[in-house]
Amino acid sequence: MSKSLKRIKAALEQAGVPHEIMEMHGETRTAADAARGAACEIDQIAKSIIFKGETSGRTVLFITAGGNQVDAAKASALAAETLGRADAAFVREMTGFAIGGVAPVAHKSPPLAFYDPHLLTFESVFAAAGTPRHIFRIPPADLLTISGASLGDFTS
Image (cartoon, rainbow, N blue to C red; front, side):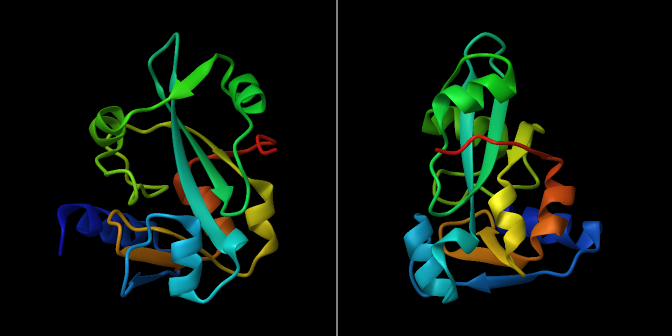
């Protein structure tokens, strides 16, 4: 088991929330790949999108439904600063995960995090579990709680 997957498993167990970690037959680098693997709607995939604060340099995480896109202007307004795309090296350094496996929890450095309210309309959602081949199923309200995110309007 990879270090990243172990970190996710430990975080979920420590939080005491109902969850199920699943290994997919193929990669789950995209929301569409993950939805096919989990046999769910694309919007049940909780994507973890990382931005970098252009002034502060801080990590800003947006957990959004798989079919939604993060609106740069709305996201910057929530974060109270202009946000730029985070490159792969920044993502790895700050989260401990490679792009394609970034989980919404258990980051090396806790991010400022925002949560798409649309995810709360589902009984369960699926998120990356630290690798491109693992996802976990969790009630969306539990994911909101353990991610430390705030609800926000940041999608277009």
